Length: 95
Image (cartoon, rainbow, N blue to C red; front, side, top):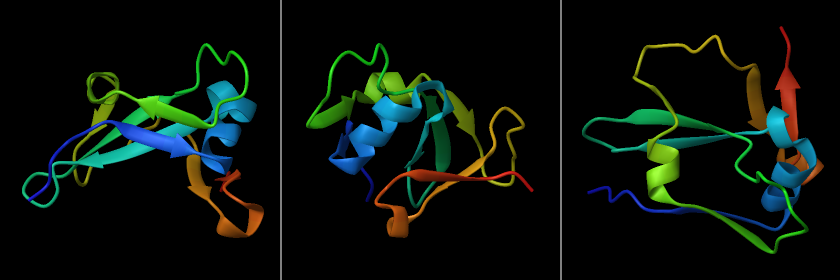
């Protein structure tokens, strides 16, 4: 059974959020397995003050962000994936 909770970005993840700011999206998949939804959080590091060891995104913040239901696509953001070869830095697929 899934329990929704705060999301923590650490190390390279928090650094990438600080570096890429408005180009960075956090995708939270919630309510698994009964009713999965994807929440898109743009720029979770804002206001981006200083370097963080850990970045916590409270549940009420990510739940208030854009929600995508299964089989639904968003046209508001590019396809972004984290590539472990570049240490958590997001790579963007512009195809």
